[in-house]
Structures are given as C-alpha cells and as structure tokens.
Length: 422
Image (cartoon, rainbow, N blue to C red):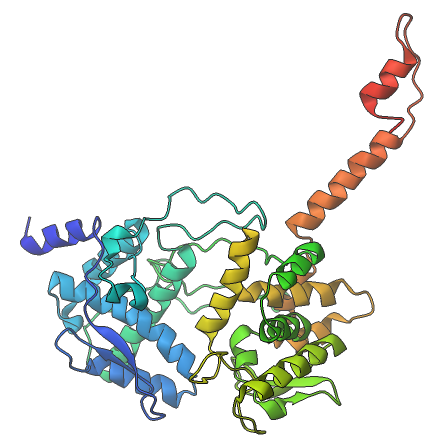
C-alpha cells in the first residue's frame, strides 16, 4: 500500500487541518477569493467564480460554493494531490470521508484570543436527542446528508466547467450514475407526469425529505416574551408577518418600510428582484417603537440607511450572524432550538391554513417558483396530527357504548375504567 493511500485511510479518522481560507474582498468584481496555505489565490476557483458571476449568481451563492471548494482543496492539500490530476479514486474517498468523519470543531474568535483550542471544546453527542420544547433534533457530529449532497453537486459542476475549458483532468472525479449517464435525461417523458431527476451523481447521498416545522402559537408567544429589546421584537414580528427569509429582511432600508401601505420591500434571494410584502399592523407598531429607540441613541437616520442596526457602538448594520445570536439568547432562556427559518415556516403555515387565503397568493408571498413547493405547507404537521388524534381518542372515550354486562360486574367500575363520566 502506498503512502498516499495510507494518508487517505487516516483522513477518515481525523479532522482535516484548517489551512487556507475563503476571503471576502468587498469588491463587486471579485467578491470572494479562495486562498491556499501559502497565501496565494487559487486560480481555478477564481475562474470558476468569474463564470458564476457572469451567470448572474448572487454573492451568497459564491460564498456557499466557496466553502465546499475550500473543504475539497483542504482534502487535496492533505493528500498532496494537484487539483487537475485527481481521479475518481480521490472523489470517491472524499465522499467516503465526508460520510464517516466528524465535522471540525471551530473555536470562536473571542475564545481564540484567550488561547482556547478545539480539543477543549466538547464534541457533540452522536445520539441526536430531540429538543423537549421544539421536538427538533440538534445537529449531530457528522456531516448531514444535505451538506454532502450540496458538496457533490458543487464539485461536479466545478470540474464540468474546467472540462469544458480544457484546464482540468480528463475525467470528472465526481461522475454521474452509471445507469444515467449513457442516455438523455427524461428521454421518454410522459407529459402527464412530473419530470424526474435522472441525472444524479454517483456519489450523491439520498437526502431524506422532511416537513418544515412551525412554531405553535403558545410557544411563539413565549419566544416573543423572551426577547430583551424592541428591535428584536420588531424583527420577530416582521419575519412572522411577511414570511421573508432572514437575509432578505435584514437588507431592507428605512424607505423599504411603508407604514401607510403596510408593506415592507425586500430583495428576493433567488431572482434578486424587489418585492413588497404585506405586514401586519402590529409589525409597524414595533418598528416605530424601535426607530424611536434608535433616535434617542443617535443612530444614523435617512431614507437610504439600513433599517436594522446593532445596538452598540460603533453602529453597524445588523447581519445574519448577529440576528441568529439574538434568537439563540432567547432559546437559551426557553430551552428551545428554534431557528430564524422556522419563523418563515410559521408564517407560511398560518397563511396556508386560512381558508380565505388562496394557495397561489401564499406562493407569491413566499417567492416560490413552483406551486408544488408551496404545497408542502398544506400537509399536516406532526403537532397537528398528534393534537387531532388525541381529540379523536377523547371523543371515542366520551361515547356511550351499549353493551350487555355479565352478571357480577359493577357498571360504575366500568365507567371509571373506560373514562365515560370524565
């Protein structure tokens, strides 16, 4: 067995060294750069990012792709294999490594200053015990199937790009499935049936389908009460009222909030189009209270200024990570693990349950391209099923059964046994 094969086998048991990085430049021409351990720009990724940007992909997509490419290049740097000399053996072993290896434990920059290392941070338990409040399982120590599937798609597209340019290896290290690469996808498609995904990668895992979870009304009220300031209350009311994504709402400016028309304008994640979303009157009440707090603190004001700010000097626009930290503080008080995206699901379920709200209107508010995506909010959730089944058993228990009692049985005892007089 060669040294290269031994190193690959050992990588399945150890975390990859955190060498290289993905830098955010702040430039429109090149928003992100992948940097190798020597501090140089990884040119193949730079060319791929330029192609994605020319295809009108947003900066967040470049960042998402860049994180997957950084993980792949760290793997190649560890096994000392050039990116343009990889074979399907490296692609296969990388897919196996992501399946069996633990996720790296990262140390927050505040703790890095005090000398805390990754070894001092406890590793998450393998058993994913559901949260007693929300019923949601926390993230486990392994890479999720959705993460591995996204990584496989990105790397296959990356090498497809370089195959077309003639700058990569002869064969894509992340090929399509053997039974699906020899014929055209949906070659004999029946127009009455939906299209099937017939161009799936060979090393792509099966991602389980999960119904979105919403926050019940009583738990939402508790979450709202756990917030500490008017800005957080205004944010929570805006998310659950407009059903906007977290990042979409955080990029709004002061002129985007129109209390006269009760509309909040956001930039959609996929299309990058501007869309005005209706919001509840309570939302604008909290926004107005929050803006009055900003005026007293001396935060910059103006029509083109951000709508959401940090509450400490120096004043900065509120970003996604700070908003998530705000929600996590409320979760710590309640013992829950709600996420910002759960607020969007909650708003979608509330609208879909309204019999006077057409599903096509819900689709427009959510910004879904297909109605089938919106239909997942029509399906009954776990909480609804449990509640209705319990009500069913209660109704059955209250029904009076006409039975002929055998001699010696006490009718009062049977009523207590079956709960008829409760």
